[in-house]
Image 1: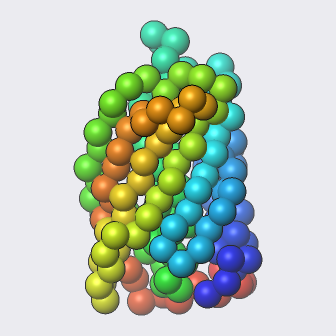
Image 2 (image 1 turned 60 degrees about the vertical axis):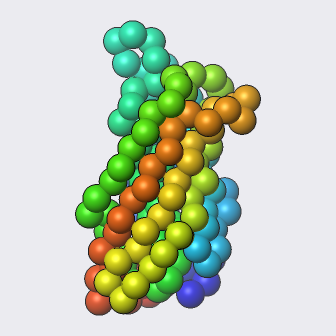
Length: 136
């Protein structure tokens, strides 16, 4: 698997692109994704909507988990929101913590622009039999 193959696949993630997510780095078992926060990311209380934080974590998960070469989809997540994600941007850092033939377990941490921990996620992904190819 190459970095460019994963980038090509994730470039097609229309929702991540719509939200403004940017894959900064990806390699075997890890990924970093950023999001510049805009007004449309805020909820009615003028805080970053929790779903935005989760979506960033899930996108980082996708990059890290799929680097193994098989299409991997989220089947379970444990989320811990620690503090509001307000600021200019947020960053998600994902790391594969364990992988089996059929499952991938990834820990993703989200930080604000002051490098403060905003949320932690442990995502479990199902590793399908579908191989990731450049034309995907």
